[in-house]
Amino acid sequence: MKLGGKVALVTGASGGIGAAVAVALASEGARVLLQYHRGESAVRKVLARIPGGGHTAIRADLGVPEEAGRLIEGSLSACGRLDLLVNNAGLFESHPPLSTPPAEWLELWNRTLALNLTGAALLSYHAARVMQASGGRIVNISSRGAFRGEPEAPAYGASKAGMNAMSQSFAKALAPQNILVFAVAPGWIDTVMAALSVNGPDGASIAAQSPLNRLGTPEEIAAIVLWLATDAPAFMTGAIIDANGASYLRT
Image 1 (tube, rainbow, N blue to C red):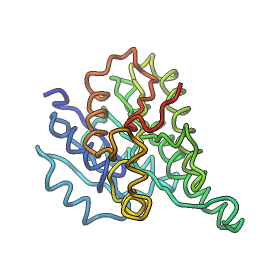
Image 2: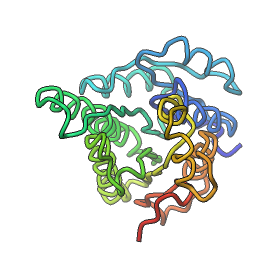
Image 3: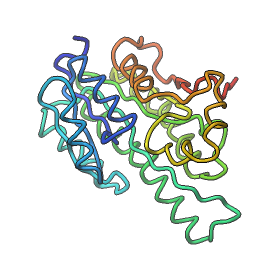
């Protein structure tokens, strides 16, 4: 199996893309550590359906800077090594600038960047220091919102644009240690996070943004992550992979 003997840490693994990634990596032999914050019962259900053994769920609030280092330490204590990090945990909260009071707007801005960007950056920082002896791969789950803008949630768009730049900076910094860094930028994916919008009056128009006339699935994103974790050539490090069903094509 392609990932036999490897250890992978997947954040935000209690459902959606994170859960699908955990299943895909385990199917190729990886021992998977599943980070979650509040969804303990959900992550236990994910653990129950992951193939193989030795998988572990670890609770951490990645919006708190100190938690990133503790999570990496906990991963090492559980498995003794770390070969792959998938930064998937994320937060999307609406805070349009013209209708959100100043204090609330700033609070939502700070909370979103703390989890989506700073948390991922700190995990990458700590993971790289573990991986530097034998190499590894980091895959960051970004968003098409980094390119097209998020008028209802500008902090989300900013955090994902920052994640893209961070990915490329880390790719340059870590290549000499054989640590490869990639980002995947999905469009609308059929997850709990998207359900409120998709099941509302705008659902049909959201699906129609893609010429496929549907949302993507978590399994489709997981397939891309699995490829980046295994077969993607080293010369691709620093790449940002669009996965939005041609709903947004950048040049």
